[in-house]
Length: 628
Image 1: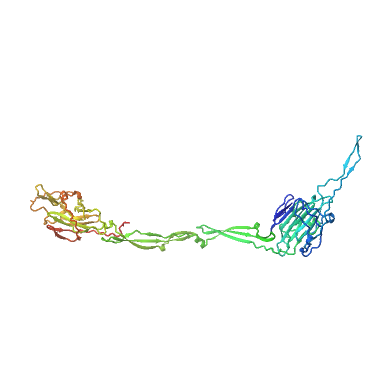
Image 2 (image 1 turned 30 degrees about the vertical axis):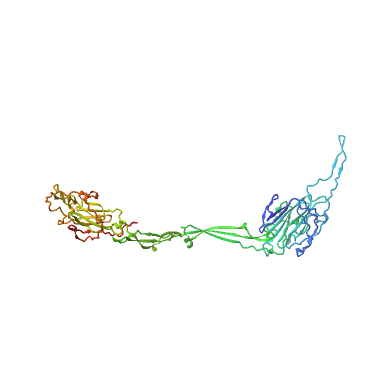
């Protein structure tokens, strides 16, 4: 049987094992025969003849007929047609190309005959007077192996060597040879286009010839390069394995050739053309350099990892053609590290994104407004602060305000005045005067709300307070008043009639007193309040008026000095009985405004004196808090 070894050769192994050698320039097709050679028709005898100039000019019939490999060897040619039984003496390898042999037709193989055995008769022996007949077998014992002779033929145009092992006349095909032969066929390719050396094996076939028969060693024929057929009587395939690179004759080593162990033509052939047509030159080594910079923002230097990868190429013979492939077994990778300062580009790559500007508006501040206004213009400023990235050190950046480009823009808005703001303005006064209703003093008044102040839902929202000048807090207060009306003077009553500073005696006469709100007779400040407020000083009717005092017909009574009583604040529901029962209703008509500084007299059943320096309160508060 044959073992195909694709891309590998056998070498450097012992007798019991086969090592693998990978050729530098390509795969090697290797085949090694098993114990039995291929059985095929008798091979033609060959005679060495000079090689023609053109290997293709050899007759086509020169190659012996071959048959597929089988486990049985082919019958050898007859002894008369074979080469001498002894193998040819080894000869040194010539420098010139060997001649191509032309095969000659071989004679048919003889039929082996076996001589009839002959038994030698011996005289009978006499032992103890008894004749014993003894018979001795004189046939030689059958040998376990047979001696063989070897011949070979070569057809260089097909790359074929045919090896024939022959035994004696009594031996037959398939008998084990006592001297088996390890063989190989190797194809070398030239590396240098101008020289025979160096050579690299691109194909190898191994065959073991160990039985009588015919063996075929076939390699790919080439037009340039060298074909060697090797042989060894060492029962070890490594003995016929080629070196990875053949630099010269036996450099570094070279197996023996077939013609050194077999009769036949020289078993090597070198073409006259070097470099092998179509074989491309080996390209230069590919060198790739990769720099990988590494740093983190904040570093001052960059660490560079440099990787240099060198990939050589080789030319291999694959599937009958040359290919350039990377020599992956000899790729080298070198890695080094170094540092360098950061470049501007690298520094800029660490620059952070600048956040958007901050926009801050100051609180709104009211502008100036006067009573009568319903709106106010507010002022504020809008400050826009941009930011910028500042390089601190190395590649460290910091975000800071861009103070050179801060902008401050004023802005305004107009908003309605609030109720509280308008409420700081005074009520707008109309007629406010002490008047006589018959002989009883009263206070007549008319006020309006400031412009823009909302009209209260309550129809009697106002409170009138007579301020006690002694600052004791014992004021006279009338609540739940409409904005326009009239009510009795403090201390006055209609039924029974009475006047402030007077008290009625049991006999119907009147006596002056420091009580009964006498302090209101000397001019008193009256404060009118809704939320806006208005105060005015009102004088009591003069003594000449008919309602200033009790009637003159009343007998005078010398008053007894009494201390001024402490008078609490009088709510509308707690006015003195004389006033509560006879409170004057509001006239309900609008009264025109009367400035506080105007004085005069009106006749209402007598002389009425309007007194006063009206305390007109109008407030203007720039910058006051708003309703926002």
